[in-house]
Length: 341
Image 1 (cartoon, helix red, strand yellow):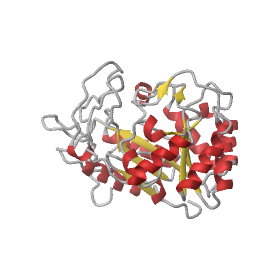
Image 2 (tube, rainbow, N blue to C red; image 1 turned 135 degrees about the vertical axis):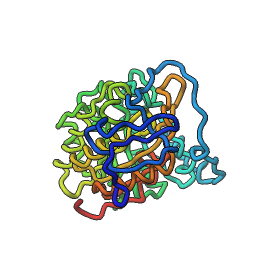
Image 3 (cartoon, one colour; image 1 turned 90 degrees about the vertical axis):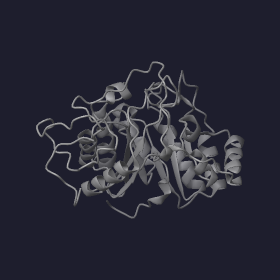
């Protein structure tokens, strides 16, 4: 971080826990973090507990959200209900959906609301999926038109039961939305499709402006956080998308913090994403959806998120959203692709 780099290897420290020595990590953390901030600081990095029943920790003040009273929230809810559409806002229990719906925005979740994976952090239901709804692409396109969106985010559950992982359904939805909404910016947030090149090609052939696939967490924690995905597979998907989509395609990824990662691990993940030519980065706080999901190890302060944003910008990301309430599609319309990156 410019102006803040120190030749030390540090993780964020909690009171009463010694900082590691200069030989604890071979990679410099390259920034100083105040001792009263929170990320895992033990010389033996924390690992999330298993998904057994646990006691949920009290939220700090900066994570408490006031519910809006805007009539736009009700209109958005009624519209989505009328068109029988799923949103990741509800299915993943996003803490920002009150704000987003009050502004008339939503992230559409296609291919049903039953996921074939059971990630330890995710609130989306894991169950045998239903057949794809052939009319869904048109309904998403109509909702986008009625809401007057200039930037739409389309995501999906993992559909490992389908030969293409649901890629053709993405393609049809993108095409329908663009046909009914000329000039709109389309952002897709996809699963990894098991890194099948043919599936990725189906999505990219529809030419979305932004391709997003989340790394979710650091390398060490990936097996316990999303055991059916892999760290390197996600990096491969992002690198393939950039190479296949060309310089006009903007790529994006995100990390959840608070699962026991250390500062050097977060920086390593950011460097790995840049090595895969990812353009946009989101950093947000993990929140435990239910007592059966992975517990929160740390609540990361806004100050730490601000410092990580500076570090990410120094690494070359063209846009960084970093904060406790940041999610993959939160304020996604604040970034407008302007050409090759």
